[in-house]
Length: 260
Length: 316
Ligand SMILES: Nc1ncnc2c1ncn2[C@@H]1O[C@H](COP(=O)(O)OP(=O)(O)O)[C@@H](O)[C@H]1O
Ligand SMILES: [Mg+2]
Image (cartoon, rainbow over all chains, first blue to last red; front, top):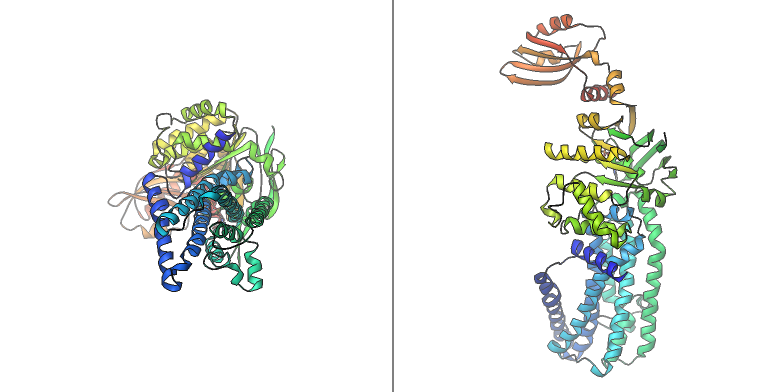
C-alpha cells in the first residue's frame, strides 16, 4: 500500500510539480526562502527595531512554509487542466478525493522541509535560537501546523474542480492569512470580529504556540495545538464532504472539461 | 444485437456572458455492440460536446443517454468502469513522464493490481508499437506516438466501448495509417467504437454507420453506402476544361461546383454536381462548352466526401 502510494505520488510530482531537478530545488527551496526572510528581517528592523525581529521571523517561517504548500499544490491542478489530464484523472474509478489526497503528499513533504529548514535558517542567520530542550514539542507544532495547512489546501483543491481559475481567490486568501493569522503582529491586536475569523483559520494558533515555545509569548501550547489540529480536521472534513458536490457541479457547468 | 448506446433528444447548452449557446440540440441515435459509429461534421458542430456527455464528464441540459443501460447523469460511476476515451491532439499527456511511467500512473488510477501492472504495460505498449520508446520522455514524442500512447492508455481498463475524438488529427499519412489499423484491430476484438473525424475517407474505411452532425443537430444517419446512395451518386461529375475565365462557370445555374483546381495554365479540373436529376454526359458537355474547350467529362463514383459536401450544402 505505501509502495503504491509512493509510486503514484512520486509520478504526480514528476509530472506536475513546479521543480523537478536538483538545481531548481536548490534555488527554490534553499536560496529563495533565505532571501524572503532576509527581506522581511530588513523591513522589520528598519520599521520597529531589532527587538521585534525574532517575533516576525517566526511568523514568517510558518507562513512561508504554508504558502509554499498551498501554491504548489494548487498549481498542480492548474497544470492538470493545462495538460488536459484533469478529466482523465476524474474519469478513472479511483475516488476523486483519494486522487487529490495522494497528489498532496509531495507538497506536504515540501512544506514540512521548508518549515524545518526555515527554523534552521532562523537560528543561523538571525540568531532566533531553536529551543532544543523542547525539540519534541517543536516538531509536534510543525507537524500539526503542516496538517492544518494541508487540510486547507485540500479544500482549495476540491474547489478548483469547479472554479477553473482560482488564482485570484487564492491570492486573496494568502494575503488574508498573512494579515489575519498573526504573521507580522499578534492576532489579538485585530478588532474582535476580525479576530474571530483568525480563530477559524489554520496558522493562527500554530504560530502562537511556536512563539510560546521560543519564549516570545506566554500561552498554553497544548490548548493551542489542540485548536490548530481541530481546525485542520474541520477543513479536512469539509473537503471530503464537498468533493462530490464540486465534481457534480463541475459536470453540470462544464468546468471539468474546460482547459485553463 | 445488444444496444450499447441509446441517445434520446440529447441537448447541451452553455451560458457564456449572458448568451446561451446551444452546442448540441436534441440528437437521437443508437449504437449496437461491436459497431464503429462515426460522428462527422464541421468544426463547432457539437461532436466533442456529445462525446463529453456520453463519457459522463459533462451533464446534458436536456434529454437522456444510456450507456450499457446506465444513465449518464445518475450512473456515471458504473459507466466509467466500462468505457474509455481518447481526445486527439497533443493534450492529455504528462510530457515529463516516460510512456512506462505514464501507463503506470493510469494503472494505479484504474486500480490494476501492482503485480499485473508491469506485464500489462509491456503488452499494451507493444500493441501500439511503442516498446522501443517506452522509456523516453513523452515530450519528445511525435503526434502519432502520443495518439498511440493514448490508445494504449485507454485499453488499461479493458473497455467495452471506446470514444475516439479526432484521433488522427494532425498526423502524417503514415501515422494516420498506423492509427487506423489499430482501430480496426480493436474493432475485431469486439470493442464498440465512437469515432469523430474530419477525414471522410477515414470514416468510409472505418465506420459501420455514420451520422452527419451540424449546428448540434444530426441530419443523416446510415452506412456509408446508404449515405452515398441517398445523396444521388449519379449526379457527380468530373471534367477537365480549358478556360480563359473561371468566374463565369462559377455562376452557371445548372451545376454546383464542389472543387476546382488548375492543372496547368488554363486547364482546370472541376468536380461538380448537376442540379437536375436527368442529365447525361452529352448534355453536360454542351453546358460546359459554353465556357471553354471540354477535354473530358466522366461521371464520378460518389465518395463519402462528395456526399458530405453535398449534404452540408443542402443544410446551408
Ligand atoms: N465549455 C464551453 N463553453 C461554451 N461554449 C462551448 C463549450 N464547449 C463547447 N462550446 C461551443 O459549443 C459548440 C460545439 O463545440 P464542440 O462540441 O467542441 O464542436 P466540435 O467538436 O464538433 O468541433 C461550439 O460552438 C463551441 O464553441
Ligand atoms: Mg471537437
